[in-house]
Amino acid sequence: MATRGTRSFEGLRIETLRAARLESHLEALARLRISVFRDWPYLYDGDMAYEARYLRAYTKAGALCVAVWDGQEMVGASTGAPMADHAEDFAAALPPAWPVEQVFYCAESVLLSGYRGLGIGHRFFDIREAAARENGFALSVFASVVRPAEHPSRPATYRPLDAFWAKRGYTKISGAVAKFSWKDVGMAAETEKALQLWGRRL
Image 1 (cartoon, rainbow, N blue to C red):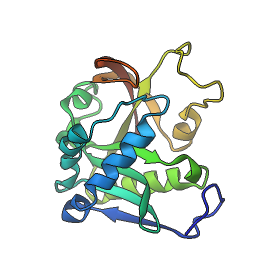
Image 2 (image 1 turned 30 degrees about the horizontal axis):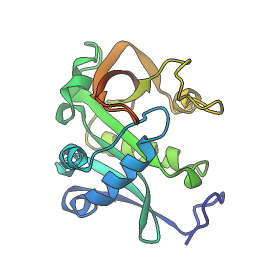
Image 3 (image 1 turned 180 degrees about the vertical axis):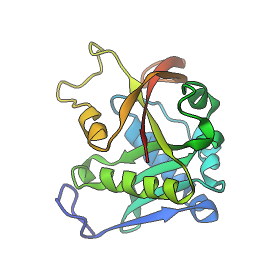
Image 4 (image 1 turned 90 degrees about the horizontal axis):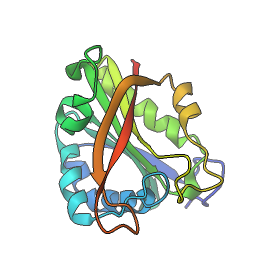
C-alpha cells in the first residue's frame, strides 16, 4: 500500500469505470465526494441520498469515472459525461459557440489530500479528454465554484487551481456562469452558488 504524501504512483491503481462496473462502486464514490467536497471552496454538506441520485447519471453510456485505488480504498475519482446528458443548468450557460452536442463535460475531480501533488490531476484530464476524442467530441468543459476572496471560511494557505487549468489549455468561457444550489457546511438551508465554466478545444 502506498504511503500518503509520497511523490510516487507506487502502490496506486488507476482504472476507468463505466456502466455496471461503476455501479458497484457508487457508494464508495459518494463517500469520497462528500469527504473531499466538505473542504474549501465547495463546503458541501453532503447527503448520501442526493449522491445516489446524482451519480446514477454516470452509469449511462458515454459516461465514465476514473478511479484511484490504494489497495481496496478509493482515494480519488474523476467523472465525465456528454454535456447533453448532464445537468441542464450547465448546458444552458454555454454560449452558441459551444454547441452542447459537441461538448464533453469533465465533471468533478476529488482526491484525498495525502495523494495530491503526484500528477494524478493531469492523469484525470488525460484519460477523460482521450475518451472525449474517441467518442467524437470537439470541446471539453468543466465548472469551478466562484467564492468571494473575503469569505470567512477561505483558508489563508489556499491556492486556486487556475494556473493548473490554464496549463491544460483551459480558459474561462466569457459569460458562461451556471447557478447551482447546495447546503454549505454549518448552514441550515441551501444557497445558490455561481460556477464559472472553463473550456478548450480537443
